Length: 308
Image (cartoon, rainbow, N blue to C red; front, side, top):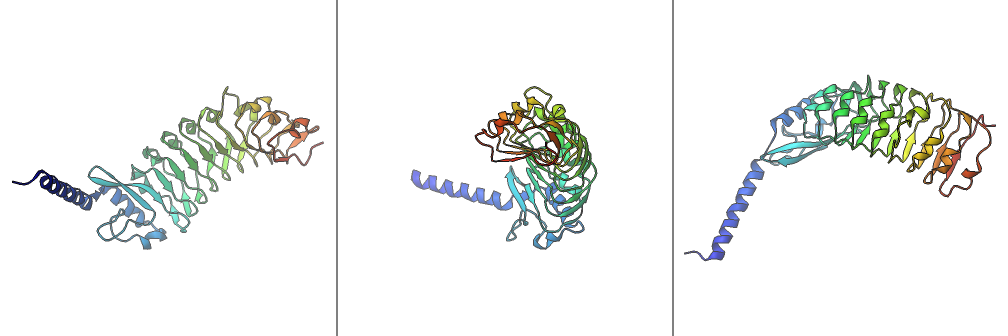
């Protein structure tokens, strides 16, 4: 008859053996294997030299593919992150990416991707971060991105997107960073974006946007968490309304190179946390309010050119 301690130890060994067996034989979900191999076969994906084997999560002695992160869910491994950037990827955005339904991070920035983002991007309900900046992507920003309720960071700057900013982006309750800088976007900035309670950084500079600041902040209590607002290098008109001082968390306000006019606004001087204010290359007139000289945190203030 075995002593209790021996029995317990023997059971622990068996349990450990079973756990090891499960981990060894845990297979990557066929859906993800198929999707990554389609991407691997795509023209111009020069990263494939480091993608050895057929299983992107690794198989036997073969490691996981470079830039691919997997996790275990039940009896299978799934791809949760795809980070393949700055490797001169050439060609259209790979639609097979939209079959990686457990993806939380998609980072393909600083490549040479062309064409549109497919509307199927809306299938990736677990995405938190999309980084596609510094590519050559075109067409409109798909409104289906507004279906990604867990998205916190959206980086689409330095591409060639055209059309208007989708109002559907206001349906992203967790969004903190929205970067649309240097594209070919037109129309007005959707004021619905002001309803995003967690939005801290909004950059739509270097586009072809029109409208006024008053239209953007017309919703009561808008942009409650906004810290950085970049609207520079567009075609915005009108003046700066006093309501702007209601953006109490604002630290950076960049309005340079627009067609704004009116007296030098005093509203921004009442934003207690404001640190950087750029109003240059507009058509403001009048004297600089004394409140700017007494502001406790203001480090840089540009109001040059065409000021009287």
